Image (cartoon, rainbow, N blue to C red; front, side, top):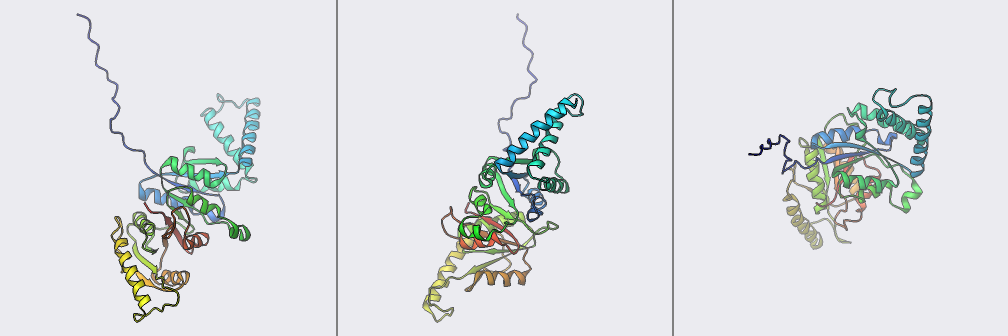
Length: 329
């Protein structure tokens, strides 16, 4: 009888492997307006049980300068005898050190990259895999990274205002938000504590419902409030005696019911406030009244999902508080 083959002790592949974890991407410019991006992203990644990835986009010219600096530094190190065999950790550590040196050279004084590394250390992030140094157009690079990483959320810093250019075209931040399906949080408040008072600006659209439902996930212990700017026909008065006003209120009430029935919608502290007027003035008054620390809004505010709503665009350029924007799921 031929000898029997002993059973294999190799572990069998799991027929039902766990899906890869989604990510929170902190997209930072390494400048003061991005100071709180990494810290807030770290808090939210823990809240959502996601991996945290930090991304910094350089121009192609800066990346090319970095690559040239890397090559020159490596040649000098090898010539001086600093090889993989003479440094602890081998070429991997040397290569990473040179990559940082080249990036610093590409950024002039190296301040942006040093700031990013300091913020990562403060947030408890270690290892080079957490930092993605990208080269190209920021919206394309961040959008592609978000899609590849299955981003559950993008965290961005404040927009750097350019008065003339901003009036003529979309800002980099707006392009990034439109380049991916992932929602985005614009963070500019110190991440010392969790959000406690959330104010949703809503037109009762699916996009604004998605923003509030996501806010409930990242701030589960917060109190939630909703503000709806009642749109009245031209010439109508906010009065129950005006038929046009009565029709607008009835239409808003019907839309409100569907909004409140959206899956994942948190319980509101009070019924949505529906009032006419200037949204920015109403927002300021209501935010001060409740002590809001997070605003959420739908990205398109009832319009084409491939475009930004006017209010979302205005708030993204100069948010009074941290701002969460989302599109319909």
